[in-house]
Image (cartoon, rainbow, N blue to C red):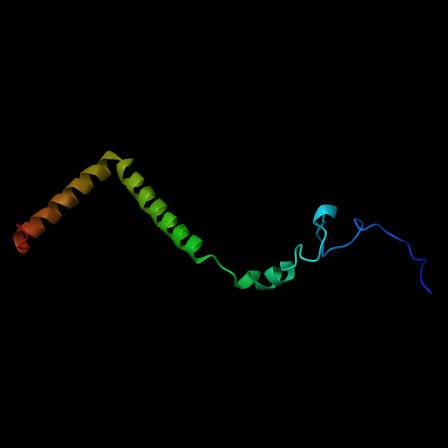
Length: 97
């Protein structure tokens, strides 16, 4: 029944899809790899996500600032007029100064 058995060396072995060198060959190498595969969809790095959101907000703010400073001359005039209108409105209706 079946083929004749062949004797193989310790190095010629299947270890859950990963090669294990002879000097590190024991039962603890990649022991938790199946567990990590199972929990990977649920394992998230919250700190990395937090910093990624900060970076994304910084890039958005920088891009909008760049568009303001690299705009056409007409945009500059519009920004100055709007800024002056806001200052005049604050002076007339607000008690800031």
